[in-house]
Length: 223
Image 1 (cartoon, rainbow, N blue to C red):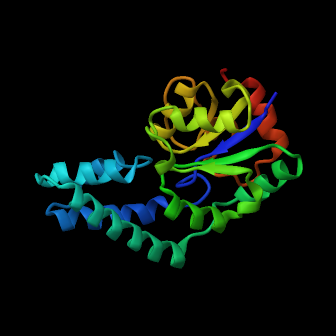
Image 2: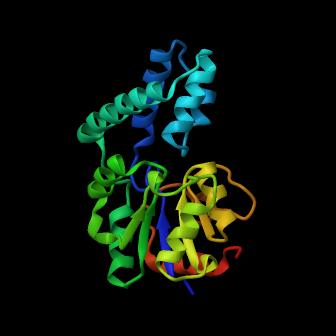
């Protein structure tokens, strides 16, 4: 039985990945060398620290802890600016959240984004749909480690195998599977044990997805 749903945020609930792309490319240019699109893809779903590390390594520069603090602040300020101008829920998301909320299914947002930027994103979707959230700066090891999803399952007092995760990044799907959750991926490919939304729904958006359909999919997902 489906006991809870955990939602990734960036790229799943909201289309913020293009905004993160803007901020990430700008970061790489500040550090001296613009990332390739392929390297940018390796930062999707990762922590801000990981993104800074990728950009610094590609530029061939070493950063002090003070440099990390400075670059993080610039990224967060830039993302806040971009989000205030462009962020909105992905198609079909609010309708599906409303159905599960009305049915009393606990739902948490589980995001590597730190709390400072997670809250505005959750608010853009509708904080009232969720029973809580776990942000990237609230766990010791963010995705692709399983800690975030184990913590989410603990909060709803459910076995991870009874919890469904929606994720769009490889890192997030890996984390959810490692935690023992059942996973539907909003991507063209995923780790072993992940069922892709396009394979059960025909596309990678939630347009036309209902709670009834999700429960039917969940019953067939690998445990």
